[in-house]
Length: 254
Image 1: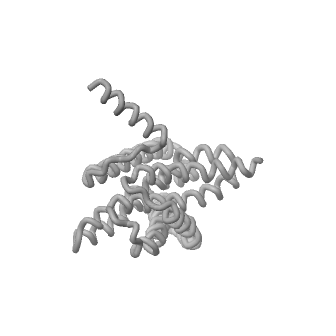
Image 2: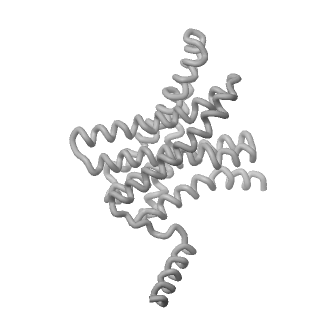
Image 3: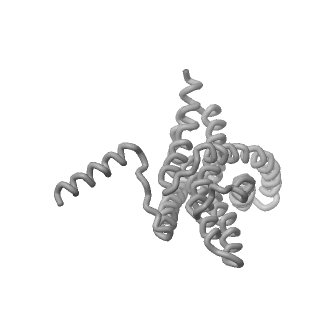
């Protein structure tokens, strides 16, 4: 029973956030296609794990030569953030470059978030089974949403690239690598610092970074939806019923 509870706790948050982005798409993507991108995100954990193992050894050596603060900075931004975002982006493009279902810019956001949450779900399973329920509850409101935000930022940049050409498109595709990496590094740095007796940095910066990530992601989605005149469909069946009831009341009042 405990195994099932931990599995639900680890997998549930990612699936809820995937559903949220999928359900808000004006032309909802096929579920089979969505599951394929979720699987690609999960698969991206493998190359990321090998690359991070190598960079972690390099950072240990750097800490002896350059000092712990600089080694932490390099580890957060290059050893973890860059590695994970590159792996997710590469796996995203293995399918997306020839995917006929990507027929509007908003689709890039949906699939980038899905890949990112596929990665986050596998990572979450490993952490939750290792550390238990408390870790799962904390990660459900921190690490898993953070990966969704990284995917949102990447997808927003790729959506802008899809609407542009030439140098403008190339610049947006470059920022689709860089911007999630910078945010990811800023998220990880206070966590890593807290492990080497810097709890003040964690308590000060970590909530601030997470709040800013949330705000930036919400604004990006709203901006993209507005630019496309993208009327968001109801998120749940109950919401659709409420909207229809409201429309009937307005009609009766008129």
